[in-house]
Length: 225
Image (cartoon, rainbow, N blue to C red; front, top):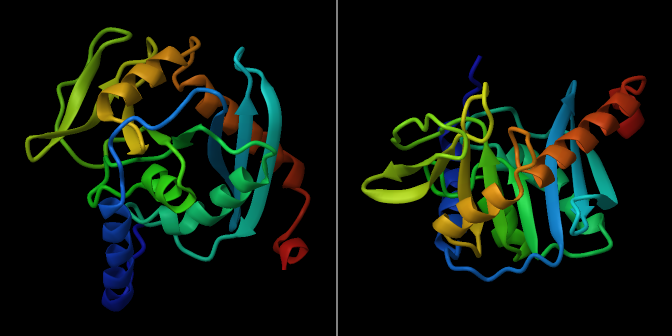
């Protein structure tokens, strides 16, 4: 069931998102020196964020996690306020600062162009790409063949791509978060596909977050209070 915000809080959060969106840079200011992926898993009311730093062979050379009690409900369009803080803390714990971050979530492909990837990118001042599994806004022609991508368009403006990354799976959405362009986001996402639905940095972060979650199953809320 969808959770609703009171009007005052909703206006306040939308104002924050619009400020984030106003600071997004859609030009390429990144390198592939330090590729990092971040994803979240959930256990009860705990948010588990896992960040992985990958070498040039896409092997994990460092990993960090953050576990917090969720202080915000699940509301589509406002996930940054639920997942942003643990994700930023996990990323900040890594030994190396990312020069390009893959985020499991939206970038500018968001009703206010301020999805989780844009939120993290602007707050941390790092280049980010958003990889999401659902279309939150925009129109597109569904890609039919593996490797085919269709522009995701809002108001005549391309805000990302819908990419068929693997046979037998629904397409994924690739969009810039911050300090990378729309077309380059797609190019980089395709470069890091390794016979999985998600680009390897996202998949490895997803796998790591799940592993952390399984290690926490015997614990309760009181362990984090």
